[in-house]
Length: 539
Image 1 (tube, one colour):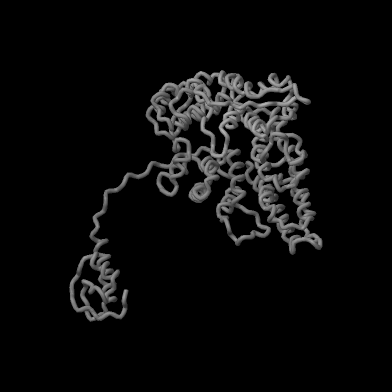
Image 2: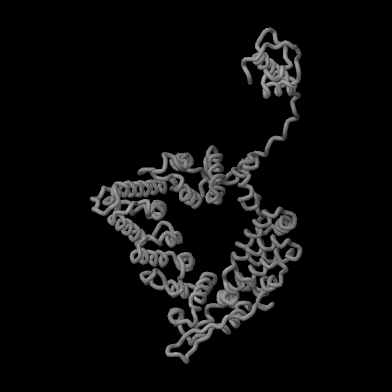
């Protein structure tokens, strides 16, 4: 607004819109519709606006009172212990990037929040009511926190979410938007919710029923299957993964004839996870016709004759006919057949050999990679630990993997089929033989806290990297995992790593000091985690 314009010469009260227009254009271009009284135009305009504002507010008629919201539901869980409540406040107050790019020796509290939430949920604590807004704000900014936050925050968080649009994600993320699921014996309530509920409510209902009454959930789905939309059928079908068993085969076999290709593909995937299913038997016949043992060579060799076409029956059983860009059609079809065939097929087909012996056989015409990769996927899908061990091989093997583990991602998935202790031992052996450069993805599938042998292997490898004179941020991902996953009881073993080491001549400048800082942060974080665990125990 121009402050040097001439005084007002034309009186008049004017409307609010005219006052706003004069303020936007400037009083040198638009004479305000307000009395001058000898004052400068800008001053008179502001006075007129103030007067008009009071007049507008005074002239408003009170609106009808809106209905009061329903009272917040009662949270029956015991309240969080006082020390743990204070700790939660500090965890929520920490912000990413606080203190600049380097945190020094201070623990990263936001990275400890997921672990704290998991421990609090395991113990069944209820949060302090005043912490609910901060919890919802944290979950709004980090989608990975949402499941744990909503479980911990409980019913009152959903009540708040209905009153604040910024927290509406909680209504979408929570099963059924906070809808209370009917009691297992309330068949009429279940039927009514299934017939009349919103989509999210129906998904939540089906998932809950599936975990406690698989047969009842399947019967509920079968009753309306023909009238459901294709995208809804796909979501509902996915819920059958929970408690999947032979009794689901007739329904899934029927779904193979669905008009939706995605539904057919999902049904076929579920059936192939049932090695005794009819689909698995059909896939075994098809895959067996493609893979054979040639005994006429100098040493027994696996020979492969990939399919020459994808017929209608193969498509019905879930084989995708169109190969991805850059992939040959025949190898694409072969991989799908072998992946879906029961792994028990191959011992009989290939001379009674064990999985390890089968994988040791040479494969003709460069088909080994395709064949072994398909067996990897089959072992993961069928949760076959024997095949997974054979495909992983010894952790100290050259090139860091077994005969079928062609990528870190596949090795991580194969490890997921093993028990937690065996998984940790394999990864510890891998790190001892190959270091940490490729271990990050494998460490991510290990149970927390890490087993002692795995923790020692990680710390020893970090120590070796330090002695080699490299900078610690080359291993920042593994160091961050160690802060969250190393057993807090291991903190005492790390005291010898806190001093600044003598740097070799070829070391990176200042690397020793940075390593001492990184190990100090690790020790501080481990001790903080131990304190957090004690605070969450019942008084």
